[in-house]
Length: 102
Image 1 (cartoon, helix red, strand yellow):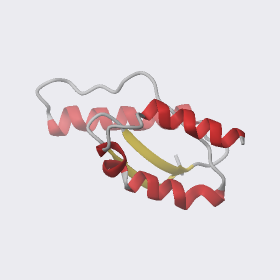
Image 2 (cartoon, one colour):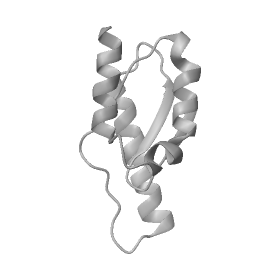
Image 3 (spheres, rainbow, N blue to C red):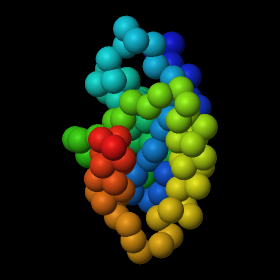
Image 4 (cartoon, helix red, strand yellow):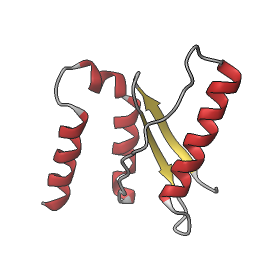
């Protein structure tokens, strides 16, 4: 889909990606492809005991080119971020929205 993966990381229950996406490509189409291809791979190649399935929802944020490196570093440090009991992901999203409004 002509996207570039700039960072990919996650924890046991979710994944974070930083992508460079062409303006003509819908985020929902990218997510559909990522979820579909990865589900197929996990179920066919890895063959888990229970069928792997993504949840129905996802979160997506756009960032300026000046914030790309900061987002990449955040994604690379996922295990550090989620090792601490706080903040929870939803709280992080809320903080992100508040910072963007400032």
